[in-house]
Image (tube, rainbow, N blue to C red; front, side):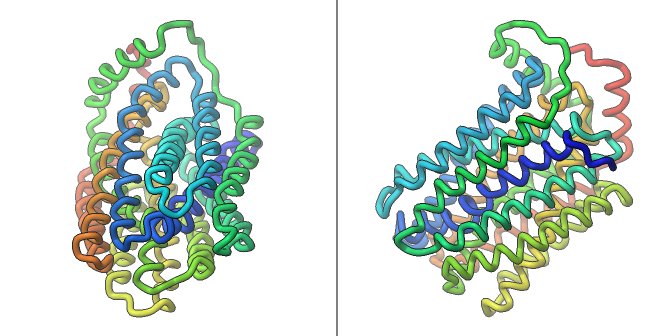
Length: 415
């Protein structure tokens, strides 16, 4: 694999945007929202789950339109830019969220998380512009690995700000980190341009969405994979969204301990993404993802049985390997099962299913925690998502799906 400036530009977006996932969604803002903004026990956990779910619902509604417009106008990079800096703006605005500002805290986060996840539709769909099909596993793995380096850098940068009087400064700092390190993506990454024409993009998008649901029925293996992903990714979203809250609530971990915890997890995530990127290209997508989901099941059961902070650190190391490898491999498998001409459109469909599923998981987790008053029981709900997801994954015929995607390309896109 030749690591050229196009690939560098693409992976730098992973470096930049991981700061948002790591600091805002996972480590600091989630705990700040629950313990400071709400400060009403497990009600804060439930409200955080609702905020995640609402933002995912918004993505689910808009992603097909955005994907179809981007495909038709050949403007994936432009849409990525808009969503990137909308995320940056509303992340910075979290500085103005104080104790008791529950509605403001939820609205600003919902918009930021909506823009972040919408942007990822276009970022993922740009992968074929920078890598050939036989190198997508490696490039996707590099993207996740560099992303975890970005998350690690953001965590270390935030350490001096982890003080009760300075904690809100973290949020504009993360916004600046994201905005600055995303610049190389928009300078270096070259989107493959194809002929386009002026049209009513919204009307065209709606027509193409209707057509895409007809088209995607031609790709049965892709549909089965998306259903599998819809389910197991819900478990991953829950872990990302509640891991710090779980550690802070069950083991009394403070912000510095949580940062240390996720520094370690980011290192193993980077290793997992890199190693499994090569495993992906050796043994195939389905086997690779199956292995990572089995690791996830072990992580969740261990977290339920965990007795100490020290033990919880080891769980974080294993979870890091699972998250880096599973997300990287899932992204690459979708690309392999999708025809080139439908990439943004089908990524929109993929995003919709993932986000619809992501509405359920955080709600279930938050409400179980609220009702029982104990997150230990809420964590068990995640196991079911992984078990059902991996079972459905076994029904996917990977080679048949890849061949269907290639034949569609050879025959030409007539829609």
